Image (cartoon, rainbow, N blue to C red; front, top):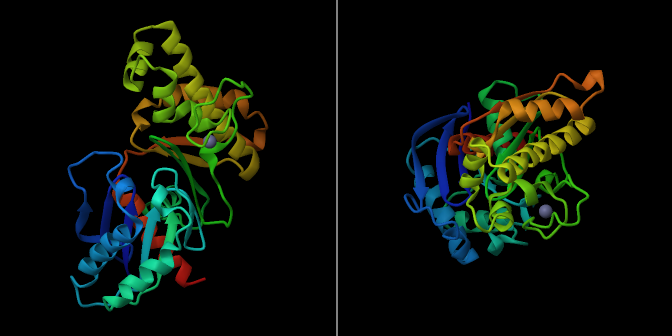
Length: 299
Ligand SMILES: [Zn+2]
C-alpha cells in the first residue's frame, strides 16, 4: 500500500494523487488551456515553488490517508534533487528544488519526502510501471521543442541523450545548447524552425510527403539522426525496446526509422531492439514521478 503525489512541470504543471501506483481522482492543472511556451518560464522561481506547493497541498488534503512520497518531474539535468540546468525553465537552474519545496511544504504541515527527477526519466519510469516491468531497462525519447532521453531504472549520471553528437558537419549548429552536430540540433522543433526559416516544421514534413526534394532530404536526415542516437545507446547499454513520445512524435515514420537503425546496428547480439510510439500523456510522467519518489524511499 502506498500513496504518492506526482507532479509534472513542463510547459504547464499537472499534479495527481497515486494510490498503489494508480492515478486516483482528478488531475490538477496550472495554466490549463493556454499553450504559451514561455508561460512558466516567466514565473519567478519562488513563485513557481509556491504554485507547486499549492497544488501538492490541495491533493494532500483531499483525502485523510497520509502521503508517503512526493515526486516532481522537471526538464533538464537533475541530480540529487538539484536542478543543475534547465534550458526551457531557466529560472530553475542551480535551484535546490527538493530542499526548497520541502521547506515550503513543511510550512503548510506537509512533511512527506520530496524527490525531483528529470521529466524524460519519469516517462520511462511511468512506462515501466504501466507495463509491469519495473525491473527492466526502459528507454524513452521525448520529441518536442527539445529532445529528451529518459531511462529507468535510474542510474546516476547526466544522460543528456538529446545532445549526443550525430553529425560531424560543422554546419549542424542549431542545437539549443549551442553544441555542434547534436541530435536536438536536427530534430528539435526550435532547431527545425531555425533551419527552415521559410517553413514551419509541420510544412516541412507535409511537403516531404508530397515529394519536395529539399524537405524529403531533411526528413530522411531527421530519421537518420534519431536512428544514430538510438544506435549509440544500443551499443552502450544493449538492445531492448525504445519508446518514442512527446508533442512532435507524430513526425516519426517508424518504418523509416527502423530501416536506418538496421543499417547502424549490425552486431547480432544487439539486433533484438524494438521501437514503439506512445501518444504524449502527462499521466505517464506523473505516474513515473511518483514511482521514482517511492523507489527512492526504499533504497
Ligand atoms: Zn545540444
